[in-house]
Image 1 (cartoon, rainbow, N blue to C red):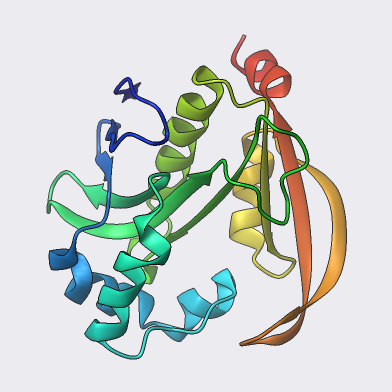
Image 2 (image 1 turned 90 degrees about the vertical axis):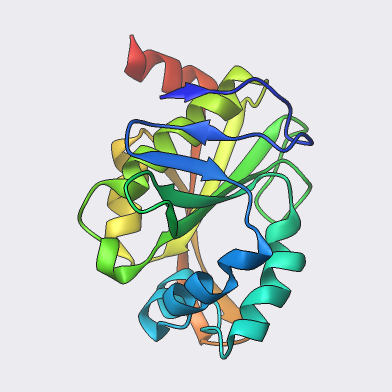
Length: 188
């Protein structure tokens, strides 16, 4: 698990023994569609499943163009299996100037193999090693896998709320936070 030096504005890659975290490419659109077209993925992540390869291409050009968004790529297949992002731009959850937000999802056929955990660990290590002081995350209350994963890495619940989601309607969301101090103490 060795981050390659850079800043969030650089196009960096992060790696683990089984994964490469790299930026999305247009040629990834068919694979992205095959993963993100799954309603269960979209529903758990809070977004509408992709309707076409063209929509996936558009997402790569817009949402996934942020330098902190990475395709989670299997070293064995050299193919994306999910997505993770560490965003330092001001968003809903960020409270301080050195805070960041993390979000991730894994294609359903790759669940239960530890890929989200491996990707989250390397992204957190990278963020905290480059000046982030707190990382915020959120998930729907019934997304037990994601909630348990964040808790396993030391995230604590900040609050719960009912939010209006444009695709799903009202959802109960859990907002969690992990400080660099908490991260460091769990590693000591």
